[in-house]
Image 1 (cartoon, rainbow, N blue to C red):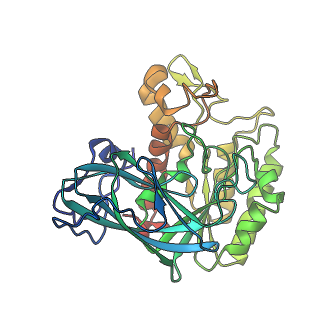
Image 2: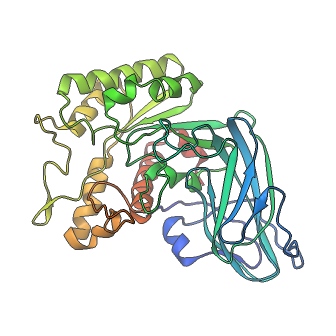
Length: 361
């Protein structure tokens, strides 16, 4: 689970739901509540619908500071999502007649989800979606962000902004843990290996063009490097590291999360990313990190500890066990699983005091 420590100035009559507390311990904001603050059922400009309530703003690609005031005349539980299913605020309860104001920073681009357009390109501009039990929104403001800290994500389908539930990448769950003034720019894309991501103009070159001094870039590859040699894998990672550093960015390596493939109560070598030509990909990534003096988040080890501690049965809900299209697999995550994996990444960011750590809630 995401376990994020911080101080919450909570609005009178507003609280995070129990399910949300499992995902995020606390949220900050300049929260205000008062009776009679509801808009009398009038939706904010640019918004329509009830559940979900959707809001659209015709802004150019870039980073935007968003402030939302949730709550209204009756009690409500509201979840806030942006763009391609990026969680910005977990389920939050407001009492009747109370409102609570929260802020966050959103990275807007086109396509809004996966950079190659897998699953659709979305709408140009900024899209917000409010769900929950009778979600209520009293006000929304959007303004360009001034020199935000941007953290870039590079990876595969276990990281990316998955457009369709229940598929979820851990990269689309962690924005809820990021303070306003910092944004997650998720360039991960389904099916990518270290080599294909490096060479596709829509992926690494597009990401690299945006990187500024001190921007962290998190690199997770391995799931699709099934036939990649050790030398090629190391060269691909080293090339990305070198190019990021040349822009003044801060590369961070992330070993791939485990697959749910058991032999008894232990995960198999394939689950631990020993690939088809016998290369232990996480070990190779750790070696590159050591050689290049780059921080490494060992998500393989952390996710292995989690999955093996749960065992073959209890670990199933982390993965896709029932999907609308009938796909059932042990690689991709449910929203619950993506939240747990994101929590492991955030834990390591805090422990290693990586550049994003000071911007976490």
